[in-house]
Amino acid sequence: MCGIAGIFNLDGRDVDPAILTRMTDVMMHRGPDAGEIWRDGAVGLGHRRLAIRDLTAAGRQPMSDPSGRITVTYNGEIYNEAELRSELTRDFGFVSRSHCDTEILPAGYLAWGEKLFSRIEGIFAIGLWDRAAKRLILARDPVGTKPLFFSAIGGVVRFASEIKGLLADPQHPRELDGEGLHRFFAMGYVGPAATTMRHIRQVEPGSIVVHDGDGEASRRFWQPHRKQSFRSLDDAVECFLPLFEQVVNDQLISDVPVGILQSGGIDSSLIAYSVAKRGKFPLMTASFAEQSHDETAIAALVAQETSMPHRIVPVSEDPHPADTLARVVHHFDGQVADESAGPLLLLTQELRRNSTVALSGDGADEFFGGYPTYRASRLAGGLGAAIPAGFAGAVGKLLYAASGANEKRLPATALLARFLLGIAAGGRHAHAEWRRYIPDFMLPALYGPGLRELIDVSPMAGYRAAIDRADGPTMLDRCLISDQTYHLPSGLLMKTDAMSMANSVEIRVPFLDRRIMEFSGSCSLDLVVPARGPTKPVLRNALRGKGASERIWNAPKRGFNNPLAGLLRGPLRQLCDNVFDRSRGIFEPYLQPDAVRDLWQSHASQTTNHAYALWPLLTFALWRSELAGGDLFVRRDR
Image 1 (cartoon, one colour):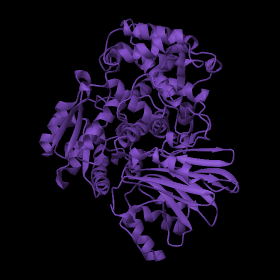
Image 2 (tube, one colour):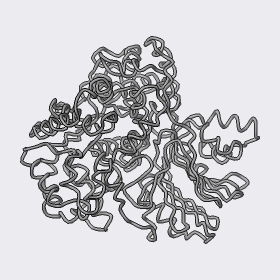
Image 3 (cartoon, helix red, strand yellow):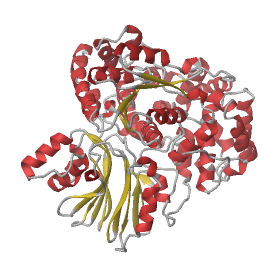
Image 4 (cartoon, helix red, strand yellow):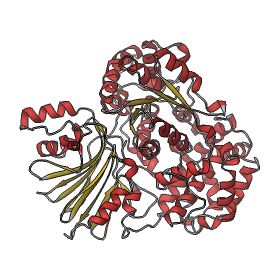
């Protein structure tokens, strides 16, 4: 994994090497092993290298083909590199100069053009310059595992792996975007194409964006769909097992040590059992003092049964939680508010002591129906129309207010409140509403003049549109696809990338290999979201087939969550008092400082549990302070 950046001056002006160097070096954490820039007049590419394959200088970037026509800067891994290399050698006379997968890209583009991107099995963000066509191409992998931000302002196109890379150019505007903030406060993220910053966008998953003499154009080369070929559980498991074995084997390729992020859940356990015969890969597990969040017992049993070394990281014992949060916000660049980011940051920090690469179970819930929201959507499909929206909203507010001091992971009152508020606000799109951080009924009191005109504009409009345009035969199929195309890349994958790369760790995601994603799309709804019984039956039965004990394959889902309510009232109490009471001007003009303070005081006094509403507000305040060059507290090592 690496950090990439680039500039294309459409008016032909030469790229300033000092600016390109600044854009690249601000992302040194993504690539501590080397940093280089390349320029050709009006275009410049930068790269920070985290050496994973071919650790020699032959793998350095930016990299050009022998003719010098194509130059690339690239962040990712190509798992079918050997197959592509063989085809290029056989059909086009390609001559290898290294064992690095990067050199496949310029050669592949010369051979296949834009079809190259749909041929790659892997995770990637690519900046490619075609000197002959004077064309800059930005490409992002099928599901958006790797981020790629860009802007086109005043005749200058800039791109980078992180927003801070763009903002390292002092000429780049630093304005916040009201609509982006509106989405951020609602969902804890903005969406797969937008950001909280004016002028800055994302290349959408499975897409390319082209800048040339004809302007800007974007094209999609892959997106998930559901065709439901498999209806027998046995047939599905029989097909899945060898496919998953192949995918995991492909993703173990590395010239540096590899570990496993082992939560104790079905997904990471399946990875552990799949690699057990291939070596002693260390398992890394986060432990939480709040037992409803802790999965170390199951993770330890997995380690015992697979005979692999196991390291437990007590994230609840973090001696500097405010400083950890500062690092989280810094590496998120104000785009995500995810309460589990801190534990993941600490976990990958410990993992980096012995490994540079780790496999994770990310994406299995979205593709194999692990979230309770899917059953809620199934239930709402038959029950929702019978519940008047006004009644659902009124009861939902009462239950929300009754949450009080309950700090368990999934209190029944909180679940029912979320269900009813989702039906009240979303109707047929209730699925999107269940992702909310700040309920819509709070907005009239919370929003200041900078956002007031958006109160009646749904911040979930993009999510709802993703549901409507999804290629699936039923509403539940479309909900699954919308999570895969909208929710997953916007929140979870951005979190995994930012928190791992903060520690110079590469995370690989077997469940998001395109072969697995397309297999999932071929499974019937009953195999993905059964009406009753345990969730994820295909994965549970596959794990059972690998010899895992029943306590493992039949374990209930918990999820990688941080006990947020207690964290705000306890270890982060001083920070919250400082932000919400004594630095309230940081919220203006977007939010009403007095309303924010009242929300915090209600939570702090355990009157109502506002943890999820407060978290994006706290994240926003810290990011805005950093963006303006100030600090609400002293930050430690980043």
